Length: 332
Image (cartoon, rainbow, N blue to C red; front, side, top):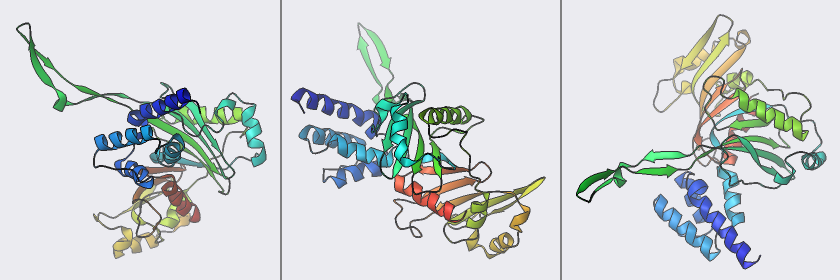
């Protein structure tokens, strides 16, 4: 790489430090630095200084950062919808992309853009998965009173109120691991009202344009999985709601550290319900490291069976998300 190209590449990475890298969770940033044996620090300012120095020194490179970002950005703190996977042969996927409007994005695993509107901006196609990402910028200004100050100019007193520029972006992802019997649309945007409807329509239209689907993707109902999970020991079950025409049955644990399985009366009440009488089921579940030792953290999940929606309440890593989905699918 020519010196000018190398300098430009480093500058782009530096620009991404404040806008993309530092908005990830502190534990994830520490992991990036620790993995590459770099000085860590204790706060964001330390992380920023150490990352910038490592980029300058060449000890933290674009592939290292992009590999890390692909594991942490856009995973968790999201709504996940499960669908039946495309029928297109894996060997044909690249060719279909090359004939689409998104051909230039093939193998662009990480985007550094902050588009004003949701935009398909990154594609990771490997031998075992296809991940397509859409991004939407969501930055703004955050009041920072600690930086306020006053001063006198020309015998007039002025008061300055400080705002810190905040960079943020939301990620929508189509995720298909070829060995899984499902694919997923993962949305990091609020679900109020019908806010997800235009997102689903855009994702659907883009996937059809690429040639992954001929008809509309078909959602996979998850009520049976959530019913079964409330009777298993895979998770700590905080609550369950089972629905039928005209009403529903709730079983809820109010323990601060415990679930339905820790209250014998609640467990017996749940066991006494005839699942066949209830078409729909929701539930709140805690996936704990004590039960799933490969989790990077405990993960709180809300499941909506009829909607085929899984709400993950915390930012986590890609592997964490797939551990959660694996348990749900095993109970399906």
